[in-house]
Structure formats: structure tokens, C-alpha cells
Picture: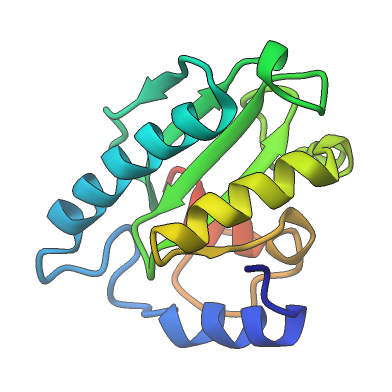
Length: 157
């Protein structure tokens, strides 16, 4: 399920805790680890492919990255999927690891997005489209260069 933009913005603001920059504590990392493994498995099943997976993420507000190969995607490029450490948020973009680039949102094919959103919903996660994450972050406690919601929930800190 893809929520409307206003509801997503409300969720992002609600999860924003200036005291917890990279992870919300209270066992969240272990829960995110289990959820991430399920996300990887479901994405590989849904797209019938083997994915590259980065599980060794440190100093970041996201738990891990799944790289779906271009051969399995309607986008015609590899698709990057990330799971945030906060609130079971998931996002995706096409065309390289610079997921927050301007063209990543535009290049993600609608069918790929819908399939990733469906997998996210199956896991009880919320898919956040890139155009919302690229909006100006209006919270606190991030570095001057971290200006988007993308930085708050899906980037290195």
C-alpha cells in the first residue's frame, strides 16, 4: 500500500526524535535485522532474482541496502531498496547507489515501485516514495548538508 503524501509526512515527523539520530533504541536494531532478512527474501522471490545485499551498514539511519539487478527490473536499471531503522520505512530508487539523486525517483518504473510497495506492505512496512523523501527536512540535530527527509531516515549520518 502506498499512503498519500500528507499521511507520509505526518509519519516522518512523528518518528523524528532529535535524541535518536541513527536508531531509535529499545531493541530496534535487532528487530530491523530480522525484518531486513525477510525483506531480502521476499524481494528475491517477487522479482525471481538473486540480490546484492549490504548488511554491514554503520553510522546510518537505515539498516541495510538491497540491490535488485537490472535484468529483473522494468526500470531497465538496478534498483536500490533500503530499510530505515525507524518505523519500518522502506524506499527505492533506480540507477545506482546515489539513491537520493534527482533522477533516481524519475527512473523507478511504476511497476517496480508497486511491487516493492506490495512486498513492504506484506511485511507491515510503509513504502515512502522518493519525491516525499526529497522534500526539505524541517527537524533538528542533523548536519548542515543533510537537508532532506532522505537524509533523516535513509542515509549515512
